[in-house]
Image (tube, rainbow, N blue to C red; front, side, top):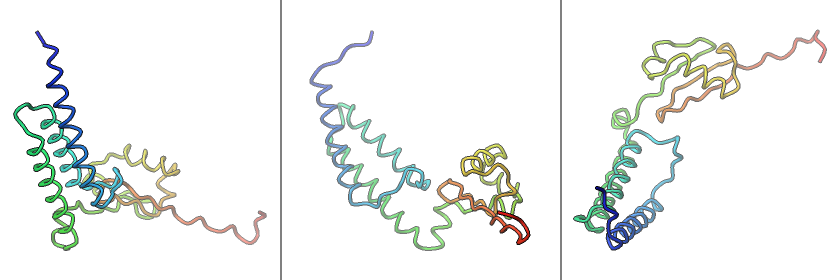
Length: 165
């Protein structure tokens, strides 16, 4: 049978979670901001690890908040180092997935689509969200390193001089 638990244990867990949240918030304040959609794979890893540390430390009776805070600081320091290493070209190729051209001048590169882990349906949905009903209207679609897809329209030819406007 599941017990209700003690008020003291719940209060301790809430207090530890609050302190760890504040530690993370203060440290994140001094790091660069990134939109959620712009997270690189290593950003996702550190975000998940931070969540695990906060959750485990807050609810574990045998883990002090200082232990959790030390783990948070270590994760954030490692993240900061990796962020700086991305400025070196050889390491950037190792840390960031490559960009891939999915559409060039209205033609879909099926190989690049597969290598990006996307189906034609995925691509069509992205094109519709960018206002394109056909690949023929797309000059360039690029699968970005952070997982988003940038879409550039083909230029619309000007009306010929004999047509009325």
